[in-house]
Image 1 (tube, rainbow, N blue to C red):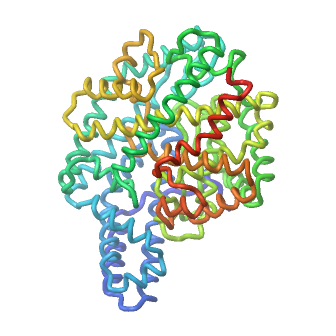
Image 2 (cartoon, rainbow, N blue to C red; image 1 turned 30 degrees about the vertical axis):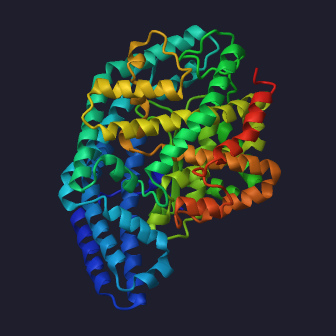
Length: 564
């Protein structure tokens, strides 16, 4: 069993790969028997899995150390190669969707593959390859700005992720100083971040218009492969969040201010929740992994086998370090059947959230790796996030392993934070709708649009005298806005599904877990709404579901001994 560090990388011969894919597509088009067509699809899937494994290997190694010149160059290669490769994938999709054996192929491979292929065909044209390459390069340049931070603070040189403990310090002056140091870096790079985003809006709008879409909004939805719902459903969901969640979130923030003994909760206070300090893990990465072993062994046979597999193959890179890209993610190396978890542990409760959240993603793809279709490795994003956010809640019975006598503080803040996240999540979504409906906005107008929406969804937010944040620049640090447009409402939709699992696990934990396992094993073989139904959940788009789901959670939070 090869460990991640020993996996070999060789730059793919793109011309040879595309020639083989092209030949397979021609043969598939001419295939007259189901057996012949299925074998060609299997060959195409193998070629794609091999290429995408090499691509992900580079992306991981580049994000682990963005200073590594070799993998920086290879990332540049893939930024340019991926749109060229996509041309052949699109040619395959066209053959697939127009095939005379389509109905029989759908029985073999599932109708979701054909739904996804039809959507993908609307998002690509060969003439757009230079623009797609430009989009990739701009996205990589954003990552470079954000990972290049070397900020002197407290006698140390810190990147953006390493500020976490200081932002939660019981000493308010430390929280303020840390926030100011962090936002000074972002402010110093603010014009460059505005420039990068302006260029991204421009090139994405150009791509959308070339493809015949009225704006990038419609193309963004097609790229996100949204099946069974549209922009109007999302807008109605945002309205429910405004009506149901914003008042509750504001109440929770008012209680937080009172609890920590201040009159006004400012931007540098928001991460500090309890007067004697937030719950923190009682040990380092090794301690957390040890607790993870116990937790996943006791949770289920499946999670035990999975977590051992991840460690044996060295597929966890968890602690923040210089040169490492920020954030956390899970990805998948299909030819190896190997999920990979990347994060930036920094000594806060967020370390445990990553262990449970990203493990939820990784566990899903591990459980559905029997589905050999590349499109089914992960479901569409809003369904993906159900696995991660629900796993956070399924792990609650083991939180004492990590937090000891602080476990009640952790659980309260985890649930409260999940609720107060919803308004922020839909704000990120609505902001992008505004921007891409008005692509000619200036940088200042984009910032103002964000600030105006903040006042609707986050009315408690107080930037005191920070001119950079008051200008509406908070979103500069939200990587999804730059790198994965419209990938954010997904978290909020999934959060409502995860809340349903939270309610159900308090009623019948075994039944809830079995439905969750079924959901994971289905991978991406069905649409979001079909997967929601498969798991015995209600659609978050349905009027009244949000209010109904939050009743028990609101009761738990407002009556909790730690609330006041």
